[in-house]
Image (cartoon, rainbow, N blue to C red; front, side, top):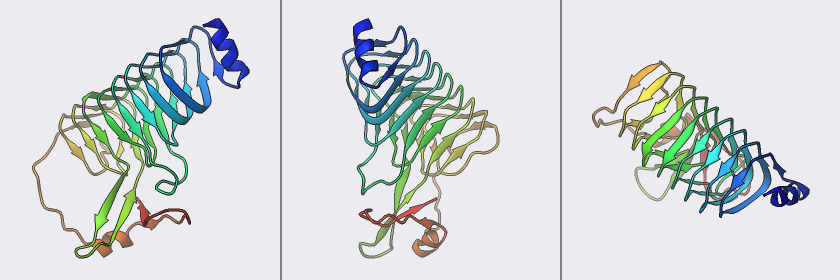
Length: 230
C-alpha cells in the first residue's frame, strides 16, 4: 500500500496514512483521502471530487456516478448497495455536492438523486433501507405535452433520523433534532424539532400557471428543457 499511496500522491492525489482501498473502480478528477479512510470492495465511483476526512468509510456495492462532488467529514459513512447519481450537462447545471457531516451515515439500498445538492449535518442518519431523495420533479399542464422541471436542494440538519422507506421531495429542509418515522413522504420543510410520521392521503389543488409564477426560471443556454428552481 505504501507504493500505491506514493504513486497516487505523485499523480496529484492526496492520500493519508493507513488508508485501505479494496477492489474498486474509482475515477475522480480530485481525490483526497485523509488518515484511516476505508473504501471496501466492489464499488463503482465515477465523479468529479471525492473528499473523505479521517476515519470515514464507504462499504460494499455502491454505485456513485455523475458530475458530483462527495464531501464526507470525520467518521461519516456510506453503507452498502446505495445508488447516488446525477445526469449529464444539458440535463443538469452548475455544481452538485453530497455532504455528510461528522458521524452521519447513509445505511443500505437507498437512492439519492443529485440533480441538485444534498447535505446532511452532523450525527444524522438515513436509516434502514430503500429510502429515496429527489432533488428534481416535474409539473405537467392540464392538457397537451407542456411541462417544466422543478429543482431544489435538500438540506438536513444535525441529529436527524430518517427511518426506512422515506421519500424526500425536492427543496425540502429538515431542521436539527428531528426524527421521521418509516414510510413517510416529506414534501414540505420540517422546522420544529420532534417526531414526524406519515399522514393520510389527501387532495392538493394543482394550478400549473400559479406554480410556475411562484418559481424562478433557471437560465442556461445548454439546458434541454424548461427548469425552475425552488
